[in-house]
Length: 86
Image 1 (cartoon, one colour):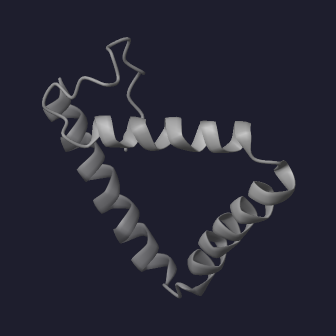
Image 2 (tube, helix red, strand yellow):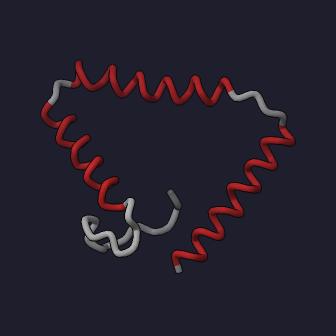
Image 3 (cartoon, rainbow, N blue to C red):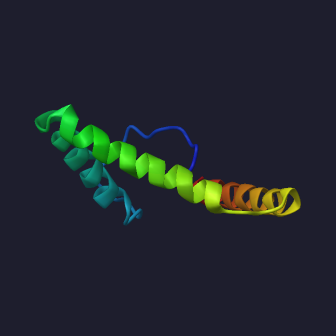
C-alpha cells in the first residue's frame, strides 16, 4: 500500500494491478456487512482485529538502531514502488 493520490479510475478494472479488484471487492463486502449487521456484532469483531494488531506490534522487540534500519528499508521500497507507478 502506498501514499499516492487516489485514482479516479474504475476500481473494478485491474489495469495491471492484479490485487486491486479483489481488495475493492473485500472493501465492498465489509461495507455491506457493517451496513447490514448490528454494531453490537461487528464492533467487538473489529476491536479484536485492531487489538490483535496492537498486541503484535508491541510484541516485536527491536532496538532503536534496528527500527531505523527497518524504516530506511521501508522508505526505500516505497520510493522505488512509487517510481515504478509513474
